[in-house]
Image (cartoon, rainbow, N blue to C red; front, side, top):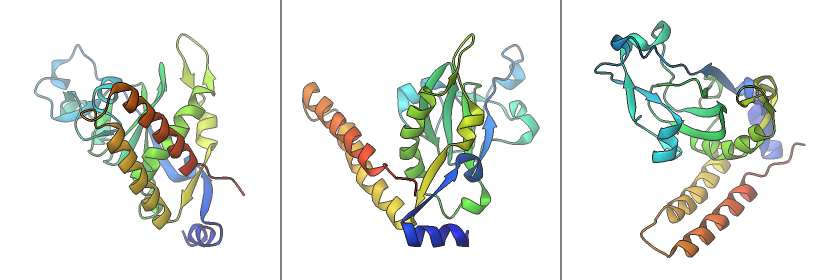
Length: 209
């Protein structure tokens, strides 16, 4: 941690491979034939439909499973990122509750050493760039899947805590403006969205030194 903080102080940010920053877990689907996994469930179980319907910060899933469906008694920790790495590629969400998710998702949970270094709302914005990377690094088979070995080696930036907070503040305001569908005509909303995506790309463009 000391070396990371020193690099942030000298250069403004540090690049590290994703596998150094996050623990990985794959999602799965409990057997639909076994009602004990599904009846009166209380554990959030996320699917692509959750992102499509409710966006990129999620606190509740459309479907629930029971505690019996939790393998090894271990849920995905709160404040993990779910990234679609098979079939539909290049979608993600920050999950703010303990959960499970289906096999389309890989979950990224900060390692303990990075818990106080990473602002997960910043990382949720940066994962838009990871989405684009994933679309260009696929295995072709019965359905598309991301080259996970290459993804684990992908280097991503960790700016200083103050810079992460600044970027989140700016992009949160843009995001709120673009999602306020009660104000503006469709053409105006589309223009706002393009402007938001342009500035998001600019703010998240870091050069490896």
